[in-house]
Amino acid sequence: MTTETDQRESVYTTKAKDCLLDEIFDCGQCFRWDRNEDGSWSGVAFGHKLRAAMRGDTLALYGTDKAGFDAIWYDYFDLGRDYGEVKRRLSDDPVLAQAAEYSPGIRILRQEPWETLCSFIISQNNNIPRIKGIISRLCENFGEDIGGAWSFPSAETIARLAPGDLKPLRCGFREKYILDAANKVASGQIDLTALADMPLDEARRTLETIKGVGPKVADCALLFGCGRIECFPVDVWIKRVLACFYPDGFPEKYLPWGGIAQQYLFNYARNCPECGLN
Image 1 (cartoon, rainbow, N blue to C red):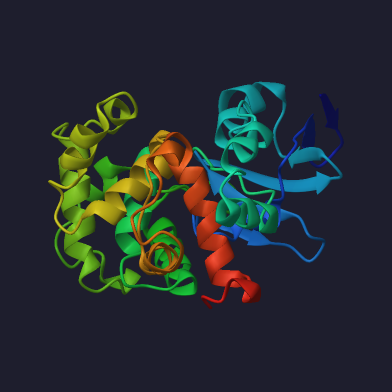
Image 2: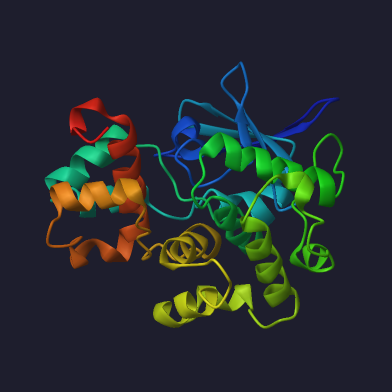
């Protein structure tokens, strides 16, 4: 692991197996990253800008140093988890084996819980380009300028808004859901930090007290924002997977890694012509 510094930006590098940025940032788990012409990716997380690139099995992070890596990016990229071992545990199922082989570089990002919850509320009945557009307008209108980019606005900031203030986002019916979520989080009625250690059913029920949050959004918020990899969000693509390959339900033996399996299956169903589902 090294830190390099030039006149423009610091660069921190670290070994990262089972890590392909195109798969990580384009599998529907996050919405604030964009691919650059050179193949690197630029985004914002936890109020910090970053550009990331792979050099073989080395992850290069532009715009951070060791302190930033230790504080934010090590956990964000889930670098403490052995994804090779996870894939080995899933590989005795032929469908999971094929799905993992199709997307070997997916990792589950550990995102900021409020941003994740709000983003997946916005994602309902929506497509990825439009989700990204709404989130971009949310940040530009209510986030903080962090030097050429915008932070994600806090729940407290959104909770101070009145109905109609989110009209510039063009988010439609989702506006009332965003405001309800912000008010419940800002008031302390919902403690997002507690969800990581709460019994899973209780965590789901807690999130489902928010207007417009059902099982799928709750599981996405828990998986991508709280590190609950035992969550297995079911959307239209996963419903197709279950109907075709697991008519009796997803095998319980794999649920300890259900969220990782879900991302392999989601990407496989959506993008692999040979799977027969797209």
